[in-house]
Image (cartoon, rainbow, N blue to C red; front, side, top):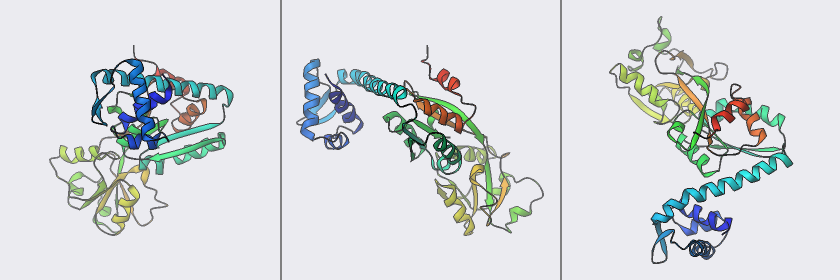
Length: 309
């Protein structure tokens, strides 16, 4: 039994039993992948995969039982490598962070800048995706840390920690009737206009929908996007009013827009940092976490990562 055999099995499951993709992922040939799988099956005395001719179509019952064990073995091997590197080259290495666009664009830059000044020999890799994609990158090992507001708490394989709380704002062109209001804006005011906001599943969109639903109102959402900058662009074109994360608005930068506070209209959002359970984190990773969210000290993170009794 060797790690190449275990990786071949794991990637076969991750790639939907497509051995061509597995071979590309592992930089080997398709016959080589098939051989690794067959040798492991012969050593264990069981079939891990269901076969239809030469094709793999699923997992056998023994295979279903073995996959979590294989995942743990490979995770522990990676943790062993990281632990050794932490002692031998404590200030060198790689840090991979997966985040949604809003976090990557507005929340993370100061932390990344300060971290790079502290650890210039650590290569920093930033991946962007939907909240679900962020979670998947963590689970596959592609990312060490994940930052998002939505979805992360839905994955029991992840440890999630609150980083900061934020609200929404309404953005409108100069001279828009909403800027003439003498009282705080209401959802009754907003529902009178076409609305441009986030796609479902992004940046607190569920709280926006809930805010209208509580008042029995149906907003006229004419355009959705993942990116607050895109939303603001179409607001500037006069296509509607925008509802965006407050962190995505800068009065000095967004001079062609006017901003109205909507913190009282929609539920407060919590951005979370996520880590795959059982992961060994290099020392500099804890430094990055605390740089991004000062309340998340190394002691706090270690406490959260402790196995559930």
